[in-house]
Image 1 (cartoon, rainbow, N blue to C red):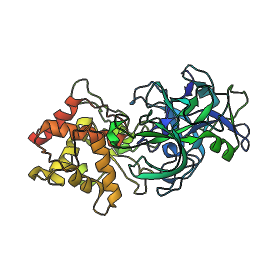
Image 2: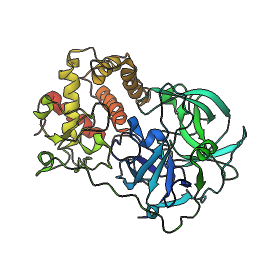
Image 3: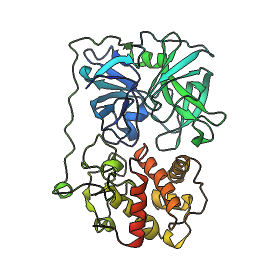
Image 4: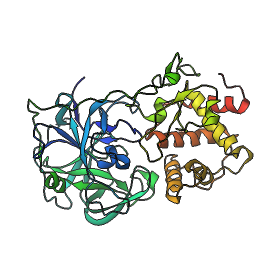
Length: 421
């Protein structure tokens, strides 16, 4: 496989619910013999995970459902607090030198850091979220700004560079370079209203962590040519399989040509995708009696240590998602809104911020088709397809690979009571 260039897609190989970008390659004075890739802390150091976390990667232009390969281990990361102040959002991944290249896109390696970028200069971002070289300008440095985190809740940052919005989800950690080819900083994220505008609305900005502050913190040096003799991080073993979930399972799709996962324990694939459970519904007793149920995952790294049900086909997973909404939650009798569903989905004792994260995520990913209080009907296939698309995207952190006909087939079969075993 060709070496991964800077700008390639990268994510925590265990959590896998969102991804970012490799910014550049560096060495650190305190770690001779190691090669590091820079990315954002919130990409690979999720929920307090840090040193030793396995990281997977794939080329920036790969399909978002492409399985990533082991890249390296998190060596260090700046901690993040929702209330802040957060001045840096960065992590160093100890990478296998044989797997990476110092080049960014087609422009070569970055050779210098711009320690004092001026307002108004042109900058270009090289990230995996856009798959393109996107220009903007520096609009200034801001004392305090709130940026939505991976869970949708705001994180407060200070002393950050801001630019008119030129990034998308998945660009976090990407290098921002000035018109002289010097490194200005790394993408933190974007903010502004409307959240679903992705640059179409007024006031949206991209937030950039200054490179100079990070290089000074960890005494980093840019790498332009990868030297020989560097050490390699130890590759983690694959997560153990649950024999009950993998013995003689005929994974597939109930719709000819539909997407499916045949390995629910491949941790380089996002949990809701690899388990054929696009709603990422936790393993509970009612699920174990459902058609197509074949087992469960090991606990994830969240504070709740969630265990996810595994289905033989994605259609079985979608049908259980519909069953949860229509029957377990009781919305088959009416009263379904995004707000009401989010309150159930987050859990009875969930804080308001957790409910709001679901509401904002689903509404934002529906391209304006959903509103927080708009009435929905579980009997309307089009409305359920729209809701499913937004919810499945939110759970995976990427657009669901399921085809629309797979989702509609599962919903109508579950409603009619003729879902195949």
